[in-house]
Length: 298
Length: 298
Image 1: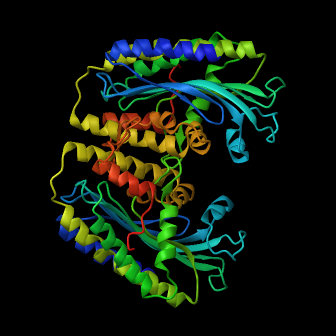
Image 2: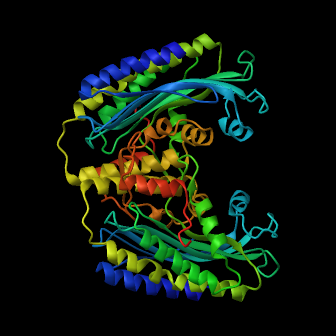
Image 3: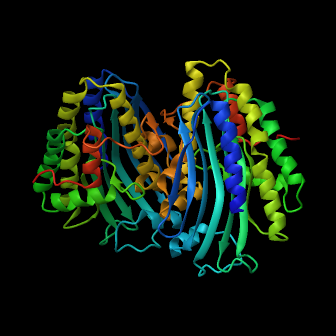
């Protein structure tokens, strides 16, 4: 898993660097409680306002409070405070409001001995956050994820798709962060190799799922009004990440590397009091699907 | 208390409207579980990027989870789920990066019968969040608050000043949101009238504490770099409010009016990966005092 996340980070960063004609800033960091990571971020690129691709390998002893927040491996005891975690996490926020933001994260956890049932599990997923709807883009993104799921017995696209809609829901807004994708956690069916094969397949197909979309949208014309709408949607992105996202809230409570945890936040965001979309507008089209998740592949 | 918060809202809004040459949008709202409020907000004014002054009077029965989050009245039982709350809350974010943001909130709570010891209490305070340091401004702000405290036996500036620094601390950043002011909660010493008199004094002196500062700074020259720094500091404001602020997190969990709760967020904010200030710069001056709170009146 460690080898895989580093390898995929290299592959993804190479393609993103070429597309954007930008170099990532790399920070190799360590954590005094055990482990560390390699963060690669740039902002103000040609295509991306902000792009971050992080890998981390951390281990140690959990604080009891953090242990509760960690959840996972249902059968492991809450008293088992030793943990190991590794994963790749990426967030891309393009400049062009017609090009969607994207997030993906694939991770492996151990709690306790890492051998017995429930002491190891995988989690992850990928999801798309457009400001404007292009249904063909969303169908493409979902179909690549479904193809990965369909190749593996341990995975179920329909289950993981529904889980994604549920996870990325912002209760105080009554809407989803975006148009979904897949999300899964506590994946420990069959054996570790089967689960790993699925996770590797997903991570390896990230570029196929997203690059065609951003290439198609990155130079589309847009207005100042489109840009402001994108900024408002980025405000919702910030709300979800700071208030609900488990990775973020867990990181803030466990002495994680703050800059790596918060690299998921957009470069800029906006909040307007009582902003309302015009009925029947393209902004309204987006609101319909974030308020009522769609089965994109039916 | 209800009369007072409505009266002070009128006074403050009148002065802000005159200063900004802007009219507040007013929303009178009600809450299906009981009570409601009057929100007044404008954005894109001449002086203020966003200005909000809210009054609310809410009551009903708490969800047990919300009851725990509510805290307060130490002697009241956690099983006592009936509550009443009223208060005024304001947040002002000026355009000019030399003019500080300000927040103030004065509130009264009852839990249970509202008569017995610990079943009623007051809370509140005011604090200043500059992007650039003008020590005379901060001393002026603190001295007005200290004068209110000094006029009332139930209050202690030194205690409430320290409490403010502690409350507005952002643990994951190791810094305070701003340069403080006063904060108090669970105020139920002596009798209700004495506590009310103090709270009314504070609320009534808000304009004296802040208006001279914003008038002095609103037309100062500034650069694009100053503006970007202000936007980064507003990002920290968002982090504090969404992750730690009790009023906000309580509101998000209790079906409060979302637009009123989140009106405290700035119109725009920014996050840069690994941003660092230049040693000895004016930005660095600010960082020193948010990392190491200062006794401004000594």
